[in-house]
Image 1 (spheres, rainbow over the protein chains, first blue to last red):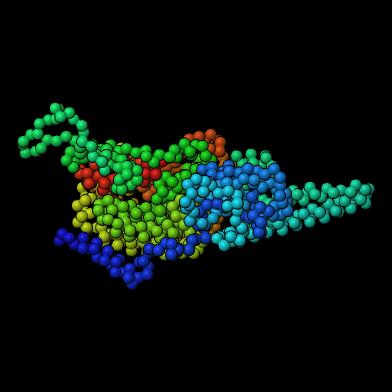
Image 2 (spheres, each protein chain N blue to C red; image 1 turned 45 degrees about the vertical axis):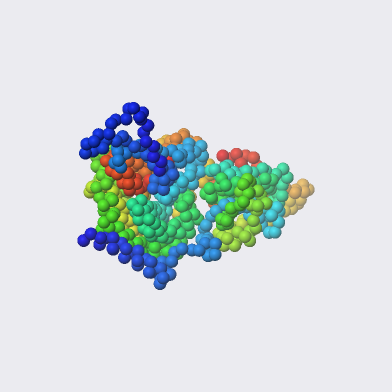
Length: 238
Length: 388
């Protein structure tokens, strides 16, 4: 009989309509500004820079190695390296970015900058309410706007942040152990040299710094990690 | 839709015959690019006689973004997020096709778990693509909104899965050369399994809504018939080819990934009309559910990425490779030529919906202008892929 197919279809819509009054599962609309779905742990939006501690300048992990700038597919990152150095989280003097801009109107949230960063310095944010009334430059974020604390990172990505912190702590511990071993070896060598003849060797500095550089690379699984502060390192990333 | 009458000099206008049939001239209608039924910025110049289509010229390029040239100027890894933007409904399969061709080029092995994850995600993509396509197609037929919203409700569940795994609903950027980026935890797999288990309920509901509906039958059966000969000579692939009864599925023909380990059938149509193309999607969804169930049972533990593959400074050896997969819309292929540098020398995409669109005129001739929308909807195009 003609029309039965349509009636069958109408029965489906009626079932959905009536069901929405009884079945919570069928009420799929979220009244957005008032209600919000929780964002999943892996959610990513735009990158930000992490700093340890309270001071966004002193604790900034970024060492201006420019790897992310080179790997960024839409090239939305702009970095100018500083002339002077500041100590990083392991106390080793490192360069820092004098300028670090991300144009998030160009950024396509691909997370490649996060994956290639050997220093765990750039991570993905979850903030998506970024509209502005300004017409120009408002979505061009500078270093001060990008820098966010490690505590904030823990808040938005708890599992990931915990593993990153563990890796960094392991790296520091490994570096310290190496430093200690190197210092002991140097002291022993110095003592031996002293026993033979004088030669007071403050040589232990060199192996110690080497050890720290190696262990900086330890927390990441990215392949060959260049010494970020040197120029050959950055050119190797090309 | 703007209509322009072909300009003819008043003097040259042929006299109106007083016979049984009125003689008229062809009316040229420019449909699109801002028409909602053209699925994006697609334009058709249609010459109509009355409301019968006599000529049809597709016009595209409004969404051209230089995808292939960008691919030649960025690193191999840098092209991966751009492939998400080709067919933005199916970013997972785009990722897979690109990763597959680079893996062919560089001879990279993929761990077992990663292969399973890829199959799971590709089949989930097929489910959500076909579901939303059916919604759009019914929308084009005038079933305003309702089936589309039902389809989007289901699609949203799958997109939530993608979001919790990869971090983004549509621009997943999930696969890497030699594996996948993030491992799926047991909760994720359990959640996905639950969604897949109830998915057939939605397919049943959709079938009740559509199959046997007199309006759908009147609008689709014997509309836009495509002969198998024309389909094969035009290089049509995917559900559109199988709707003509040609048994060709890259999953079976190439057996890429771990598909040979799975049991599934290829649904085939008989008439090659719009109705067959519509039902092909319904049947494929049922087969995909079967593949997913097998994959959830068999997925092994292990690494998800080949540790030998470098993320940065990735340089495949000199050579060329063509990797292709069965994307939801048809055969999606990436052709890469490497000169040993960090960027591909040539980067070419074989987009299924672009090639499926080439037979649009043959399908539409002799049908009414309202059928053009339905035929276009059944081809399943996404302009991001057509224009690149």
